[in-house]
Image (cartoon, rainbow, N blue to C red; front, side, top):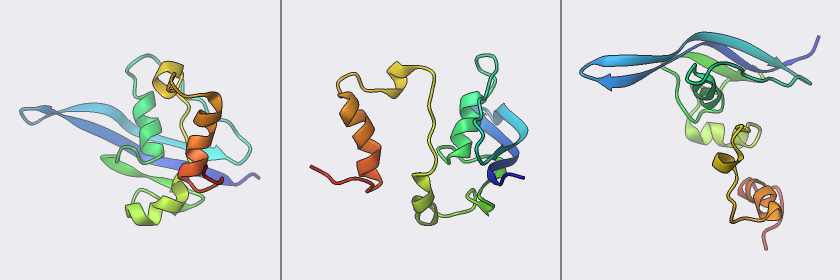
Length: 123
């Protein structure tokens, strides 16, 4: 059986909406991504796909629940502890205009994360 690479357990995200109210963006989502798999999140606009994705890679902290990377709870790690794991996680959003800087060449776009994570020499 393949290994579980990334696992979400009971992820919930609520955003403050003023006057003590909350917006329930994501409620009790669990999923597992196994080695060799590709995962796509599909749903209507505004259903929480991007919020789930952002919680999976720690761009957003969940209100409750946890995310495990190779069995390690990354939700409870400090930023310093999580730093070595950051280069293993990446989102690819559907809208290229939101993801790619049109002023950069393809070479620059590919090199930027490699340089950020010290995976290639700088020029």
